[in-house]
Length: 75
Image 1: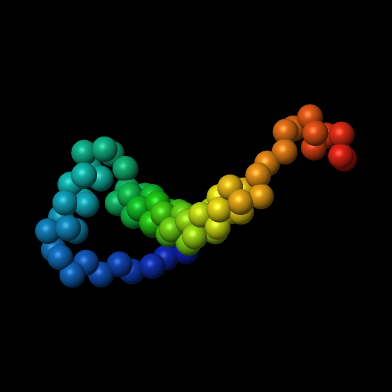
Image 2 (image 1 turned 60 degrees about the vertical axis):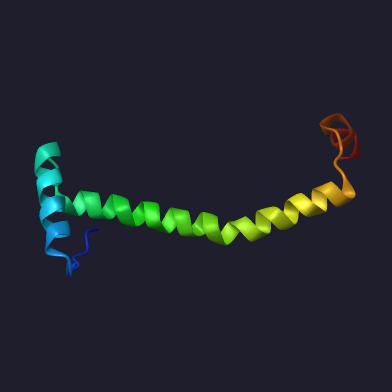
């Protein structure tokens, strides 16, 4: 399902550049914006996960790890 949204460019040059690049690539400007939003969301998800990853790494360093063979036997 498609949804509409109005994007207001405060920088007219950015809007012009977007339209030119979209025309060069023969794609819709909305596709470029959608891709940019997806990349932005993913980068922020990574940013939010970074502290959790560091915490997990510290826990592993502190408590150590088990070999896969040993873990399989325990299961």
